[in-house]
Amino acid sequence: MKEQITTIERLEENENRFIHQNSVLFKTAKEVALSQDVCRLVSSRYYTLEDTYLTSLVDVLTDNPSIQAVAVIKRDGNVQGVIIRKNLFNLMSKAYGREVFSRETASSYLEMYNHDVEVFDMRDNIFTVSEKIKGTLTGTVNDFFLVVNRGSYYGIFNSNDLLVYLADITRRDFVLSKQIQSRIVKGKDVKRTSNFAYSAVSVMALDVGGDFYTVKKIDSENYFIALCDVSGKGMAASLVSSMLYGFTNSYNYEKGLEEFVADLNANIFSSFSGDKYVTGVFIIFNEKTGLLTIADMGHSHYVMFGRASQQIPSAEDTNMPLGVAAAVDLKFQYRKMERGDRFFLATDGLLEQINFSGEYYSMEHASSIIAKYVNKDINDITTSIFNDFNTFKNDIALHDDVTFILFEYPVSNKVHENKSLIFSNNIRSQIIQSISTGEPFQVKTSRYHPKTRSFIEEVLRLYLEHLHRPQFEINLAYCIHELATNAKKANLKRIYFHEKGLDIQNIRDYNRGMKTFKDDVTDNLEGFLLKQKKHGYYIVIGFQISDDQLILSVHNNAELLPFEEERIQSRLNAAWELNDIGETYTKVSDDSEGAGLGIVMMARLLSNIGQDKKSLKITKEKGMTLAQINIKPSLVT
Image 1 (cartoon, rainbow, N blue to C red):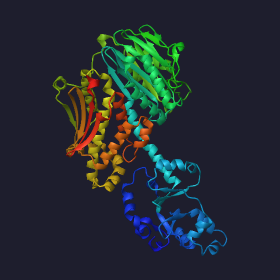
Image 2: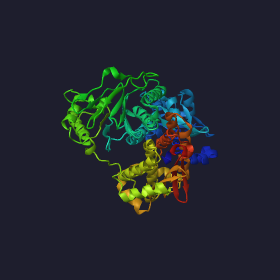
Image 3: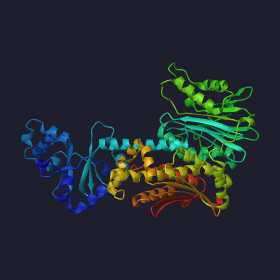
C-alpha cells in the first residue's frame, strides 16, 4: 500500500494531515471508546481525497481486492461521501468507461452518482443505530455507513459488521442467561427432614428456558411448593422465570395462597400484557397435619400416590393460567397426605416428549416408575425417571423444557435430619458462639468451589434461623455467591494479566487482555485456581450480628481498579433507580466483561426483602475490595 498512499490512505497512517485539530481526540477515542459506541463497528478506515482521479482509484482498488469501500475526504478534512467498490467497477466496466471518466474525480463522481449514505457520530449507541438502519439488515446487499468524529472522518462499517456484533451480543447474553438461570433453577435439588422430603430435576431444551420451580419452608410448619411453565422457550421465557424467582422468594406468605396467586397474576399481566402467560401448580403443605392446599393454574400435570391408591387432579378445579387476564377467580383443591404418601408433579416437557415411534412419554409412564420403586428413596426414583425418560426419547432432541418434583410426607422412623451434616460439632459450636457473642464468623478460601458454596449456605441458614428470617435465605445466598464469584474472577484477572505481561492499570492493556481472559481461563480453570493459591490471592466471606443487624461481607485481596469501580457504581445506581428489570438491563448491559445482570439481580432481590440502596456497598481499601450487605434491624429483630 505504501506506493499508493497518495491515492488511498488509512486514517492511522496520515491522521494529522487532514484532521490535525482532532488528532489527540481521535487517539483518546480509540483507547477509551465505550463498548456500545458505534465506532466499535468500524472495519475500514481507508479514504481518498476529493481530487483523486477515478482511473487512479480503480487501479489501486484492483490491486487491493479486500477494500470494498473508501471514504472521500475534502482538503479541509470533512467527509464528502463513500465510494463503493462494486458500484464504481460497474460504471468503469461499461464501454469506453475509462475514456469517458478519465478526467473525473472522486468528488465529481459523488456529485453525479450521489448514493445516500447514513452518517453516524462515533459516540452514537450501537443499538440506536441498529434500530435506525434495521430495514437494510434484511436485504442481500451489504450496505456501507460512515462514522465521523465531530464532522471529521473516523471510518466505515457495513451491515455485515453490525450483524456480526449483534450476533456476538446475543451469544454473550445467552451464556450469561444460562449462568443466571442455573443459579435460579437448579438442575438437581434434594432435601429431606423428618417431616418433609423432596427431589427435583430440571433440564432446559435450549439451555435457558421457561420452567421454574421452588420448594421452601415459609413458617414453622408450612412448606410452599411451586412448579411453573412459562409460555415459549429461550431467553424471553427465562426472563419471566427470573421474575418468578424474585417474586416467590420475596413474598409475604402470611397473606395466604389466594393472595399470593392473585398478586402474582396481576404482576405477570401488568408486565407482559398477555403476551406471556404461566401455567403452574402452587401448593401449601402442612407438615403437622399433612394437608395440601393446591391452586392449579391451567397445569394439571400431577398425581398423589397414597398407600392404597393414586389421586389425580379434577378438571373442574383447574383455573386459568396466570397472566391471561387482569384478575383470577380461584378454585382450590385439598388433599390429605398420610405418612409415607408421595406427590409427583411435572411440566409438559416431560409428559409430551415423543420417541421415534411417535409415542408420548405421558404421566402414566412416569407413574409406573414411581409405583415400581415404591420402597426406594425419592432421589433414587427421580433419577430412575430421568434415566427412563432419556432411554425413551433416545436421540430425539428435547421438544420442551423438562422439570419434575417428587415430594413425600415421610414415615418418621425412615428419614433422618441431614440439614447440618456439612458441619462438624466443633464448627457448629463456633458458629453458634459467634451468633451469641456478636463476634464475626469468617470463611477464607482461594477457590470458592461448590463445597464451599454449600458450607456458606449452611452458615447463612443458621444465622437466619436465629433471626427468624429463613425466608431470606435464597435471596441472600444468591447475593453472597454473586459477590464471591466476582471476587474470584477479580483475583484470576490479576494472575492472568501478570502472566500475559500486561499492565492491568493501563486501559489499553486492560481492554486487550479482557478480549481473551474468559476463554483462556476457562480452558485451564483448574490450573489458574491453583495459581491463585500459590500467588496468595484469597476470598473471605464474613457473617456477623451487630446492633441487631445482620452483616454479610465478601472481600478479596485485589483492589478495584478505578474504571472497574466506576462501572460497578454505575450499574448499582441504575439497578436501584429503575423499576423495570428490562429497562435496567438495557442501561447497564456491557459486553466488555459480563452484562451486569448479576448486580441488577442483587439489587432486585435485596429490594424484594425490604432493603434500600444503602444495604449494599462495594468499595476498595488498601489493596482490598470490600463488599458488604447490611440487613436493617427492622427486618431482623
